[in-house]
Length: 199
Ligand code: HEC
Ligand code: HEC
Image (tube, rainbow, N blue to C red; front, side, top):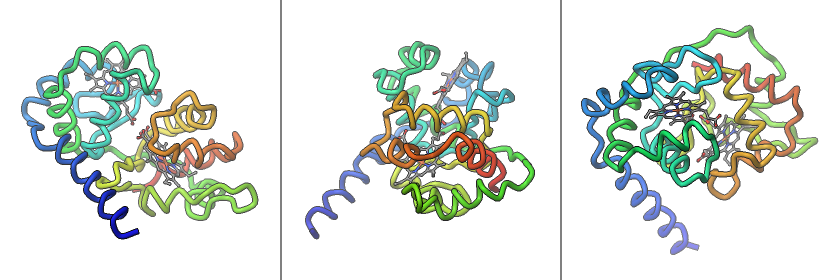
């Protein structure tokens, strides 16, 4: 048991230092010009179907870019764009966006969404999102669990449906496919709404 835990900690540390060691935010800022048309210059996209990632954890951004590059996460646009990025580009871009400030959204309060987020749905075995993503939606950088707060509801809804249907399957140990599997359409809409308003 002890050995297994130690091994997991070492694997996490090795993964993170590899990704974050070399990132240069100033170089990343220049490289981000290519991405600005869809994601905004600082990672605060203006179109709800393009995700925001200003202030997102660098390790999570880097993981997504590698997953797009290897086609582990399918999206024709991002698969083609990430193809052209070197390891250094990925480290620089991730460091730059992580250093930016994310904008917030102010949807009306959604009671069903809050219930799913904080307690899940025991009747259908839906786990509480807050257990992994943090009560304020800040995620957990060491475990490469993304920050969700302030993300557009439209993107959250799309990606939750992608996890539920197995279209997006780049989550370690199927953590998100399992979390989303038993969510109904109404619950997805509600929880996406609630999360977008987290600060
Ligand atoms: C033509 C529009 C477009 C351009 C240009 C573009 N992206 Fe994207 N990007 C998208 C779309 C659409 C998605 C959502 C994919 C999905 O639904 O799974 C996305 C997703 C992402 C994600 C995943 C975010 C998350 O929360 O999981 C990252 C990271 C990303 N893009 C980084 C970049 C970087 C870095 C560049 C520039 C090198 C870039 N993108 C250029 C359209 C674009
Ligand atoms: C067991 C831990 C765990 C639980 C419980 C969990 N998540 Fe996640 N979630 C993750 C991990 C890990 C990822 C990153 C997957 C990857 O590497 O692409 C993630 C990714 C996401 C993403 C994608 C973010 C983006 O920017 O693309 C969304 C949205 C999300 N989770 C929402 C939820 C919601 C809503 C719930 C509750 C119904 C939930 N999660 C429950 C671990 C969890």
